[in-house]
Image (cartoon, rainbow, N blue to C red; front, side):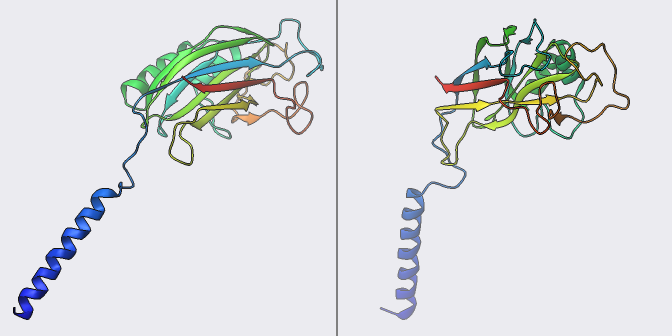
Length: 228
């Protein structure tokens, strides 16, 4: 057998072995994730006259929660950025009309999978919505107005429902931060409307009546996210 034939056979064997091995090893972009999952999102208020006694309002409550699953091209809110008109409406009035319109467009433009809207919640009440997620839309964001207030809200942005092991999370509990939307200059729960001109960026609340000068502690609310 000539050297040329031996070399050719060796190349064929190496190529065949390589193909067999490659066929058994998943590619980096392959995934074992289920293509569609559902999550139960439960919002629990933890705000009362003992936890946050400064000027605690008698009608303290939270507006209906707005929850969406989306990709990284869709932004519900972002710290140090200007609030959208929808966030302004939600933070000042509790309404979600503009957010619903905006995110219906996000769904149509393949930026979000879906959104859900709950009901008004007492300061220590709960509400639960069920929302779908897919590998393409694995980020979850939600907001709710802290009411009454000038423009304060609580929520979370861009929680990834896929963990570091590339698996859907089963359950997580998150204590929510509190934010000033930067659209109204009122400083107390019952201040009249004072539009902020020019509009300020969204900031974490640090000052009284909710904050202690550094943070809001304890949190006014939490969410529990459970895979169904």
